[in-house]
Image 1 (cartoon, rainbow, N blue to C red):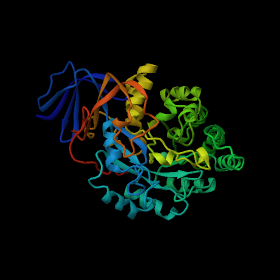
Image 2: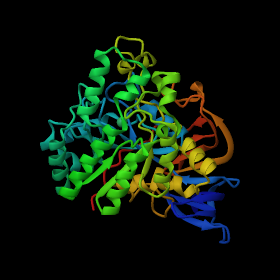
Image 3: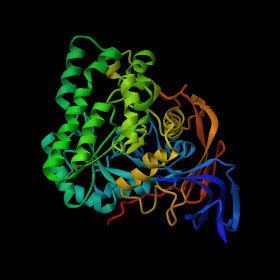
Image 4: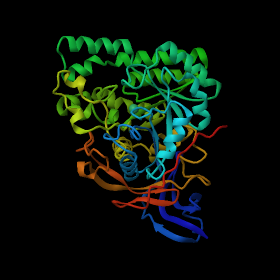
Length: 454
Ligand SMILES: [Zn+2]
């Protein structure tokens, strides 16, 4: 007899939507049973009433700041927000961690510290900074899922790499099949843009947008693609903001380069005009672009150029978003909170508004990130033997993001006021509910996921 059975569901895999039941045994998926087959017996049965059941979301890029800058976010709040939003795995950045995760000892210390602090499973990005070249192999062996690097200023405590250093590290990581992810904006271009703007006292939102042009992002991506062509190494392009950048990646994939890429929900929904109209909550980098860019990214999601959609959940305290200081918008904290709203937003953007199949959501928010980050042996699909991480989504339920519905430590977000239809109503981690119709369930059981080595 099975432990648990979800019946009368529309089961979403990356290939098809199947009417039937999902069986769970010992925290893992036992099987998918089509409507026509006999219904297996189970100790507990949940009637999904025709709702969709999707694989638990994998948000491959979050900043939970813990241990570190925990006035901005922490794991207890961030992971609850993830659970409420149908995300069952987050891959946490080493940026704004104290200490940053730049060697295997710190990796293990972060794992120990987070015991009992997360409501969802999690993996770690390791640091890829100027000073930790010798520690990268140890971090990879310890289980870091990928390594994060900036090609432009990454904060006073997180040194960026020059292109020459990036080339060296990509070649090095290739030796042990590790993945580097890059924040791509050309350092010289955006530094010059900011310095000139500040010198001339041009510090509005529009000035900030103009100082970080698409050209800077495209140039940095082209530099990385050139390194891949030369070295045969791998890279993941973080937060692609514009179709012009996506087009470079499409061509690189066609050429056979080993590149993957993500975009974020905010680039699909918002524009630079939102930053101008509503202020710092919409500040991020690369910055928001225009409406044609936001709409144009869909084609690159649909054709597989953009492999994943993530939140780049990067919160702060409300006063850090203040743009009234001497540096204006340049002085406001950059980052948008979104881990709780990514799945609902993506469903509405793709399935409702663009008539995409729900399989697209399963692909870019579960199957693809699982494969790219080396956890597909446990996560990312409704498939027998994998962890029973899944989410019930009610396609008819309208929603509006309200500040008081956010589980974040700091309850504000650019997404407040966003409306749509179709939302996660229950989230299951390894066969047990972590979020159920507005209520959080159970203790924080989240575990660290180490990279599976082939
Ligand atoms: Zn980030």
